[in-house]
Length: 348
Ligand code: SF4
Image (tube, rainbow, N blue to C red; front, side, top):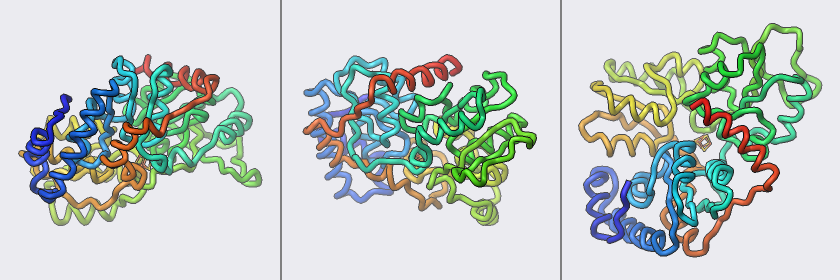
């Protein structure tokens, strides 16, 4: 993406893409903020990464690169800028730091957490490894660095099946997303169990299982239900429904396509359905709708990620001005986390 620096050029672009959904006065205000951010970005030799879940005005004005968290971290690794500003949540900025240890990595809001990343600690992983000795740990990229550091390999929603298959073992610990694990188990034909944190309810080891999951969930994707899908299909029988694999297995089974944010975007670009509905964070639906004005995207979504929502143009400007909030990771943890991420990168 190339980013404009003049307010007028930014306003014209935002107006072309978003004038049907965002009031004009808001677009003007946001264009002014974006102009100042883009000016400062050049002055400070910074690169801005924008996750697919960023609100449309930010998404289409300041990022040098947009995409999912891993794509963005890879882009950051290829750039030679001094500062990386990650417009996404903290675990994403951490991944950028894991891959780019010599750069200053900033996340615009300290409050940009994640229910999934917060569902598991490094101590939880150590306990799982003690309970299931020798079983390799596959960790979803939506986790913090200390959890990645305890893992054998990371995965994304796009490559989870390939990563699990690459291990060629009888059993796999797959953490922390309960639904992604169940969707991967279904696709790979594996039986899954979920141990609890309560030592009194430890899972019986004599059961037949090949995957060990963890009860973590994305607070956005867990909200979509099979009833939602049935209601939409009643109203729009020809709708094509796309579900993120962090949705429940029942929702994924009732949808027409399931894939990562990037896979969903490509699916819409390459197909021609009468209507599309994306079961994922609302802003992404808005961003895809703006980029594909010839496609009919149903706007029935009211679910925003409260953590992604913390990232605003105002906070991004302040982050660049004050060079806050910097991601700092203990070098030993970073190095071990890097090994888990790097091993995944070899798989794709
Ligand atoms: S959308 Fe879900 S997984 Fe992504 S940051 Fe928000 S809570 Fe976490």
